[in-house]
Image (spheres, rainbow, N blue to C red):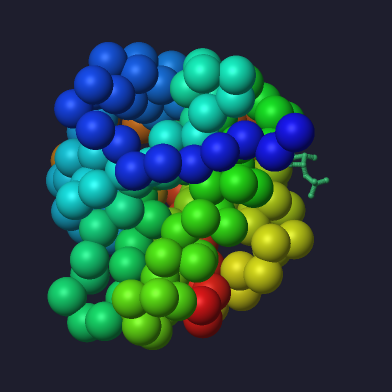
Length: 159
Ligand SMILES: CC(C)(COP(=O)(O)OP(=O)(O)OC[C@H]1O[C@@H](n2cnc3c(N)ncnc32)[C@H](O)[C@@H]1OP(=O)(O)O)[C@@H](O)C(=O)NCCC(=O)NCCS
C-alpha cells in the first residue's frame, strides 16, 4: 500500500530532527550561499501503518515558487520519497505555484536519477557552489563514494 502523506505538526518535531540528522547531519544547511534551517517554512510526513517513514520540507522562495529544502526517507525504497513528491506537486498545483525547485549536489547520483525519473528537469549547474558553502558549514564532506563534492545542481518541475 502507498504511504499516506500529511502536513507535519509540532508532534512530528522529534521525527523531523532525527531524520534530518541521519540524512544530512542536522538542520543547518549551507546552500546557494545561504545558511538555512532545513526545516523550512513547512514540512510533510509520509506514514505507513501509523509509523512516520519519510519527510519533505520546503519554503516559499518569494517569487511564486517553492523550494524543496529536504527530502529524506527513514526507510529507503519504501515509497516515501515518491509519495512526498506527489503530495507537494498536488499542493503546488492547487496553490498556483509556478515552480517547484531544489538543489542537490554533484555526488548525489541517486538523487539525480530519482528526481529526473519523477519529472524534474536539470536547469542549472552552479560550479563550485559547495566549495563556497563549505566556508559557511565546514562539516560538509570533501567527497562521497570517491566523488569530490563541489557543485550544486538545480532541478525544477512546473506543477
Ligand atoms: C532520495 C530518497 C528521498 C528517495 O526516497 P525513497 O522513499 O527511498 O524513494 P521511493 O521508495 O519512493 O523510490 C525509490 C526510488 O529511489 C531509488 N533509490 C532509493 N534508494 C536508492 C539507493 N540507495 N540507491 C539507488 N537508488 C535508490 C530506487 O531505485 C527507486 O527509483 P525508481 O522507482 O525510479 O527505480 C531517499 O533515497 C533518501 O532519503 N536519500 C537520502 C537523502 C537524499 O539524498 N535526499 C535527496 C537530496 S535532498
